[in-house]
Amino acid sequence: MPNILFAATDERWPEYEPVLRAALDATGMDYRLARDLPKAEVDYIVYAPNSDVQDFTPYTRLKAVLNLWAGVEQVTRNETLKVPLARMVDTEGLTQGMVEYVTGHVLRHHLGMDRHIVNPPHSWRPEPPPLSGDRPVTILGLGTLGLACAQALAALGFPVTGWSRSPKQAPGITCLHGEAALDAALARADILVLLLPDTPATTDLMGADRLARLPLGAVLINPGRGPLIDDAALIAALDKGALSHATLDVFRTEPLPRDHPFWAHPKVTVTPHIASETRAPSAARVIAENIRRAEAGAPMLHLVDRDAGY
Image 1 (cartoon, rainbow, N blue to C red):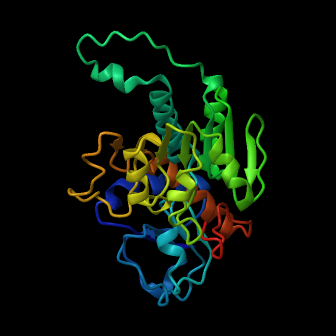
Image 2: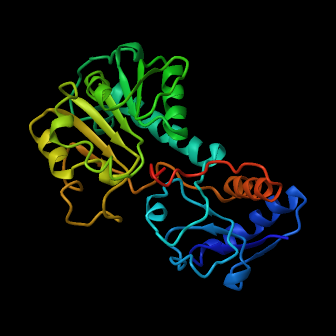
């Protein structure tokens, strides 16, 4: 019978306990789920990186850690973690939420909705946008979230280029990979969406040089990770008109400090890290299935490559 420790902030336990129990009951396993267990008896940890558990050394019987967040950058660098780490891949909640956010903001910028929402007096300028087929979109990152967003946009008629470090294939998507192809992916992006993980290789990926590779007047949407962008370089590109707008959902420091220049910049939209959220009912089913598989001796799903960082 596996002992499962729920290690997240206190307010998450009432939200997760009933749905985790329901999902675990549905597997037919006997189990013990608790907020507090003797460390030497814990088999699995359902984990949020902002929990009190930061040293995994006392958990001598631990088999795996199951992350509640899609992002694992705060866990992969923990040298006390020696067991498999599974990231949260939840197509019902996390993925669908990201698809809706990205699609909504791509359409917003494609259609030029902001100028009509503000609607200055007597601004009668009948300038219809191009059709989606004439608006190339590039997505950096073709993991679960990036691929789902790429497919949704392609279904709306946008020419979508996806870039990843390793080769990927997807029907209807122009897939590029490797460092040498990154400039080509950027050069065709009227709208650029960042959905890469936060790793040492992606920190400040979008600095001045790469922002300059984008077509004049391009739009940047970042619901991925804050450190992907050099903030000062982005502001400079917006100020000189190289980029027309940036919609940002993630930041190096969150909440975004009140004095950060993004708040007041007329070409920046700040959203408060709402692009995608772990939904407890669907996340519980993902966690229960992974524990069931591990207990049955089957390969676990969504395991993190610790060297790659995702």
